[in-house]
Length: 314
Image: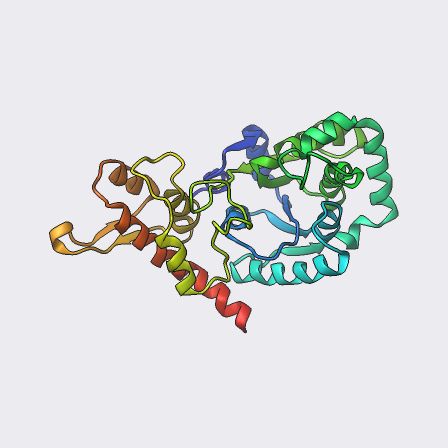
């Protein structure tokens, strides 16, 4: 796959495609994504992790920001708690193959004079309304936001500037924050970042992925836990909003390139599928039963997550 196709696959938006092509023609290009330290790294996180691996393989220098200070401001725990989670999350990322990159702990750069001055300068220009709207899909308990949560998007803009990156990766829920960066950073002498947005996937029940609902698969889940969760997964005949197909598109095929459906001869026998598009077409045509699709997806998922469990145990 050529570098551009690798960079854009499974994205829902690139701002802008022309700017990305220009970056790919240059040397020394850098891209970053920030992660608030959380208890478990799950398939929702894996979407951006896979994209960062794509971009690394497309020739980008990749930086992962372990955003401990962001997590603190967004009411995710004390600094001590999020520091411990940041170390655990880094180990999960490495186990998932996000290696040969640079990891940066947010508080190591965000408490410097240069960084803090930039945050305050940007805060002078951005209205409270813009800051609030940019946090609507990212912040916790945004029906009663704190002042700290209004600082959050401004810090994310400063991250892009101080890290010296050319591009930013995030879920589509990060779009409003990224657009603030594109609008305001040039006025401070920093380039406007190229932004690559990936989708927010459904939970296994077809609803919004949520830790409180337990409708996700952690990368540290045991084989038995994965099988149990996938057995209950919502898998309608339709293509749209089908969480099992989403797992195939965003996790299985980017990492394995194929899927084997194992079934008795009376039901058509085993079938090898070599692309997500082929799988989707076959499923839509009724050539693959939902139970067979779930079983094949489950075993492939266990296979690709096995190195993470082994790495975490080592």
